[in-house]
Image 1 (cartoon, helix red, strand yellow):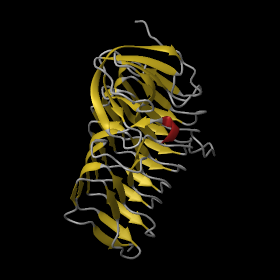
Image 2 (image 1 turned 180 degrees about the vertical axis):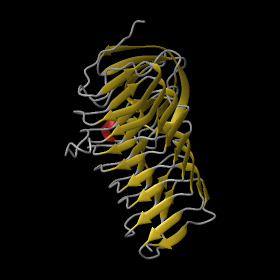
Image 3 (image 1 turned 30 degrees about the vertical axis):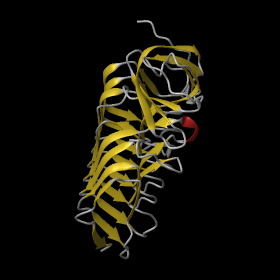
Length: 340
C-alpha cells in the first residue's frame, strides 16, 4: 500500500516504532535502558502492553531507564490496553495518549484547507485522511464549529497539509485549529501498573472515547499525575475524552494535583466539548502535607466524586477546584483519615 510520508522527525532515537499497524501486543518484556522515547505508536489500531517492565536492571546500578516518554500513542483507534507494567526511572512522562491538531493558514469557500504542523517533533505525517471526520476550533475559546468529512488530502512538504472537506468553510478561520475526530481510541484501559521515579507526570490522557484507570500505584509523582491540556503550547495536542473513570488506585505522596484538566484559553466556550464525564471513586490518597488540590478540573460536562480515602496530617476543607463544569455530583464526600 502506498504511504504518503515526508518525515523529518527529530524523534529519531525511539526504542520501538509501530506505524499503521493492527493487533500489536507486547508481553513479558524487560526494557532496562533506551536512548530516548520508548514505544512510539502512530496511526495504529488495537494495541496492548502486558507485563512490560520499563526500569533499570536492579543489579546494574543504573538509575535511568529512558530519556523521554515510556509509551506514546498518537492518532490511534480501537482499544489500548496497558496492564501489569512497571514504569520507573524515566526522564519524562510514563504514558502519553494524544491526538495532533494543526493550525489553519488558508481556507477557501470550496472546502480546501491549508494547515501547518506547529512542532517539528510531530510533523510529516498524513494527519487527516480520506473519510475522516473533522471539526475546527476557535483558538480564543476552543469552540468547535462545523463537522466536515475529508474528501482527500496530501502532504506537499513535511510541515504542511492540503485538506479538502465536503462543505464550505466559514470565513475568517485562519489560525483556527483543525482537529480529527476519527483517529481516537474507542477505549483505553490502564490497569494494575506501578508508576514511580519520574520528574514530570504519569499519564497524559488526551484522547479516548472511554478511559478506565484502575488498580494502579502512583508513587511520589512530582507533577500532575493525570493531565489533560489543550492545545498544550506549541505541540497543539488534541483533547477529546468522553468518559474517564479513575478508581481503586493508590496515590502515594504525589506532589501536585492528581487529576488536572487545563484548556489553555482565558474564556472557554460552552461548545468546546473537550471532556464528557469523570468518575473518581474508591481511591486511596496519602498526602503528608496538603499542598495542592486533589482535583483541578475545567470544562467537564459531569463530575462525579464517590467515596475516596484521603490520609492527611491535618484536615482541610478545600480538596478540589472546579471551573466551567456543568454538573457536579460530590455526594458522598471524600472520607478523611490521618497518617496513623
